Image 1 (tube, protein in one colour):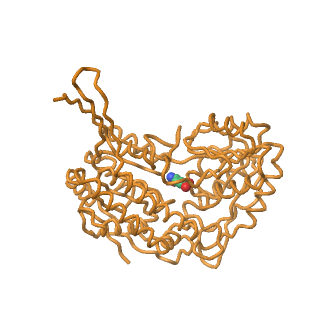
Image 2 (image 1 turned 135 degrees about the vertical axis):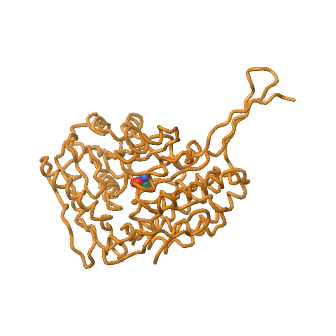
Image 3 (image 1 turned 45 degrees about the horizontal axis):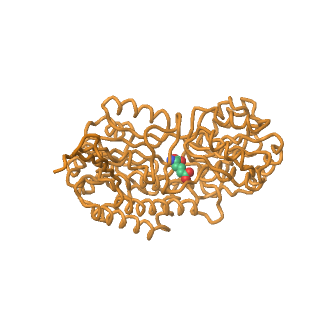
Length: 478
Ligand code: UN1
């Protein structure tokens, strides 16, 4: 039952362990995962440092083959890993299988990208000189990942890090160490040299803190909450480390009067409530034009009543449990806040009892909300969404942009003109037309603006920006 940390190519036990509990059934212990001590984190960093020069010099073919191997094993074990993911995080099995598939594809994608590391050769402004611009690894990267995508987010940080020749120390979320441990085991057996990839499970205050403050870590990539992200930025910037942060959103989905209602309801249901609303890309603000307001609210309410909230691994479940007691308390606190602010709770928001003792919450929809309410300003990170009625498109766009976040946005409309205007003028890093705000491809850049993100983009070939550093060479022609 116990799972060790991977340090310098060895499985190293810790003195205490995290108990990984199934949120669908709190009597089910998924496993125990050893916590790394501060000294063990230092060992992991030292191992990564020691492995870095040789790893940076490996051929692109060597790295491509290793990444391909990892991607293929993830794909081959998709069902089993999806079951583990659903069991530890509470996503439904189909959602979990989608996520595992995405993780496998990411490794395969970066196995290809290794062969396409970009460079440039330019003429010099001076005679007889060539200028060559190349990309080199950053060195050792510390990766800190959240609980809501237990395998995909580690994959989309680890795969590019390794592809571009960096060594890695990964700290997964304590709530869901199972998938990260399985990924570490796959990477270990694939044959990466010792120290190239290290896994250290533990608390943010011990393990995260060490990664952020240790001068041997050249770059930190973090996905998680705004306060933690800001704290990381302050500390890491002070010592000059490269930082990339992805911190969530308050994503608007705009439903215009000319929208296809079926599409609008489908986008809202998926974007706001699937994966239990626990996505930084979730559509938590549903901005609806007055003319179709009643129809939209009625349609979404009906769709919500049909949802089956139950054990994530049970056939027929459409929405799994909330991840843990803390998150459940937070979600229910916001349901109360919404009521106190004068929003109308149309449906849901109550604790549900099921056969097994899990953190079940009925998906909640608020109506008659204003954009200045706390439920529309602060990220809730659960199955709770608000309808904000607006009189026309101009007001919808203004409300969509009136937020401190800027990760993702969506518009549902049949007007090409309005869709084009929205795409151009919405202040988010990603924008969806007639599609849910959540659920992104694995081969294109991911990231936001304003308070949602910091640093260069993740994923796709844009990941090269964070995981490499540029060298400009001037060469005298012989
Ligand atoms: C998606 O919507 O498919 O933490 C991905 C998150 C994001 C990933 C969302 N970093 O929810």
